[in-house]
Length: 181
Image (cartoon, rainbow, N blue to C red; front, side, top):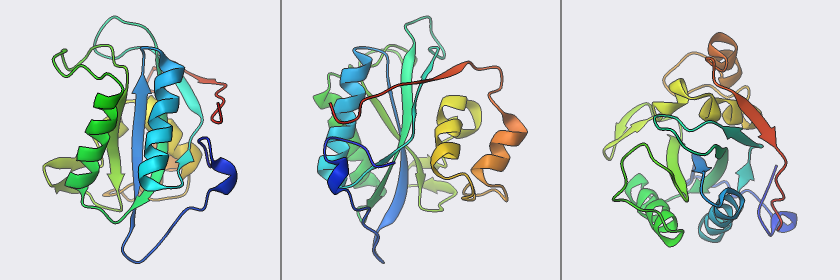
């Protein structure tokens, strides 16, 4: 599903020079506002975005409020380093505190999960992101968006990976989300 304030005008651009990226978004501080702001900023920078359903999950690695999580698909011809710089700026614009411990509350967390079909380390980033194999809140939204697509570096689709791993004991609840607000 296309999402964001301008989903009615969305056209997912595909060109010979662009690649598809899967980005994970998460927030547990003013969750709905920050997820919506993240989607809007991604749409401003990349154009059309495709969004998974939004899931609520418990905080991982620390005791804290539940997170909202989702996956957003974008197309870009930019380098991974440039995309990562843009994502960090969007986080900073939404009050991300980089002095906090790695596992702590977040206004907005955006990570590159996949970059085309790259498997390995590219520009200092491990792809696909290891959280894909650890956290149901990363894998299930990818199943929603790309069920038959092969996981980079594996001989399995996202659906097959989900069937073999499942939620791994993690509780996920799909929550209603108004993308146009």
